[in-house]
Image (cartoon, rainbow, N blue to C red; front, side, top):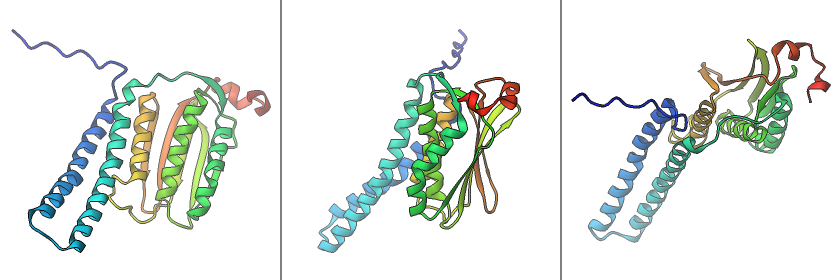
Length: 235
């Protein structure tokens, strides 16, 4: 008897890229977990001086912190299949980007990074506004953490091939500890998985001095109507 054919993946399942990321995170989790076990086994093997126990506890706390960050990311990925599909209202993308950037300006000032929003063309998009705002907040917050002190983070929106395009660009700072699985880097990876789960397109590019994440989304109105419309009529 021939082996039964597998049924196609259901829409509620995480996309293949998310499954690949999940595999990477599970593999990354094994390193601090093994380190924690070895550290504790050595601590109880023979009597040690108090300062050695203190050092072991500090190392164990650091390993536990790394594990917690990875477990949180794994939980989000496994939860993707439970999220509903993309629907909602029509609103102007530029206004949402400016509001999100304004929410993060205190963080940007603290990290000495200038936030710049370029969204001169009215771009009505159709999705759940609060959901897109949450995603953009996560992207910008992660990018701010990765940006070089004293540099600029640019959020640019434009119309291209009947789609709304948002490009977030920044100058990377020093490589974060535990890269590529630091908290801000994981934030971008999860944001990408979420965006692709919603059916969106995500592109990442990196040069010697600049890193850019670009997302694409359909317009809420036909492109011809957007190009010729009065912005006041699109609000």
